[in-house]
Structures are given as C-alpha cells and as structure tokens.
Length: 85
Image 1: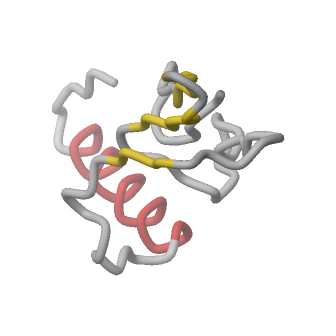
Image 2: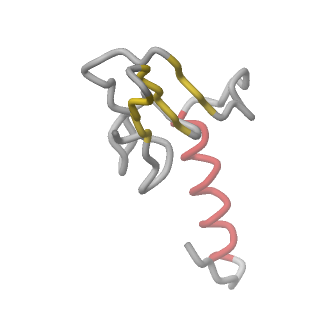
C-alpha cells in the first residue's frame, strides 16, 4: 500500500497464521503536490506496527512551509549561491 510519506514509502500487510499485520514507517493521509495520501487497506489489520518518532508533532501548515522553503531558495540564488534539490 502507498504510505504517502516520501516517494516510494510503502505499508505492508502480511498474514501470519490468520492474523493480519500492517507494518509501516511514517505515513501521511494528507495529499501533497507530488504524493498521494496513504492508502487505507480494504481489510482491517488485527495488528498495526508503526514508526512513531514524530507521531505527536504539530507541523506548520503546508503554505507556510512552502513559503519558507522558496524564500530560502530565492535568497540563496540572489546572493549568488547554488541550490541542489
């Protein structure tokens, strides 16, 4: 399943002796410019194993992050710097 976190991020559903286990690292249910939101499996898992380093973090709104990102890029280029993305 698509995890919606970064390009290529995936969630895996495995069946172990009749117990469905969903394993994922980070995931996002928020659609992004270059990523689909995480897929919801058609069957519910019995167990979900999930990475949670930033599970309780509040992130800035996307528009604020994009504005800050473009300001840093623009400022770097205007000062004669180079940017590698």
